Picture 1 (cartoon, rainbow over the protein chains, first blue to last red):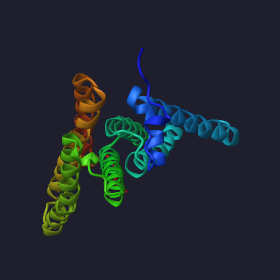
Picture 2 (picture 1 turned 135 degrees about the vertical axis):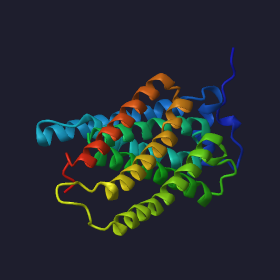
Picture 3 (picture 1 turned 180 degrees about the vertical axis):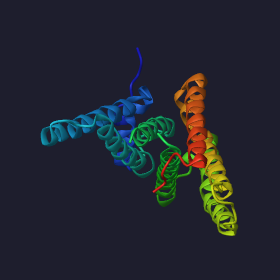
Length: 107
Length: 144
């Protein structure tokens, strides 16, 4: 049976970043899924709010704006607080830049 | 999509990618991160190439401006003088393709986008640029 890290793995001077980084030991893609869910929530919220206001919305622009938000959040999560690993940050960075690039080309 | 729009879009994407990478590098240096994102070989190479390409674009634009300024309006009536336009369009084509070749490496190497897909998109962009340049030379497109 696998042994998952729990609060006993934290030392007395652990930071909030160490606490958030606990799931990374057992499942490296944990924060990737969380960030993907956040990205979807922001994109759909923006899209449906725009649709409410203007009748028709632009899904790609909502996705691009959401990508900007997630990129900044991930940068702070990786280099500020330190709970997202560098490898996951790389995937988030390239995926979001790709969405932003497609959006600019579609205009 | 015409030449001017393709060039503007590629330059804008290049600027945004460079801006996001700069933001990340500044954030990591502010937080004294030991293993930063620029330790990754691909990111480091892309950042340096983008920096070099974007900084040289101003010099290239100045060269085209000088070429344009040195042309004397001596052509005979009825003949179209395209020399002043040929140099800038060639320079902008080189900048666009250079930027595109730098940027396309990121999704190919990290996300595993098929090189065939990338080469098809590249060929479409290059052909769009060529047709756009030809249209400018022939005066089909109104630049105003």
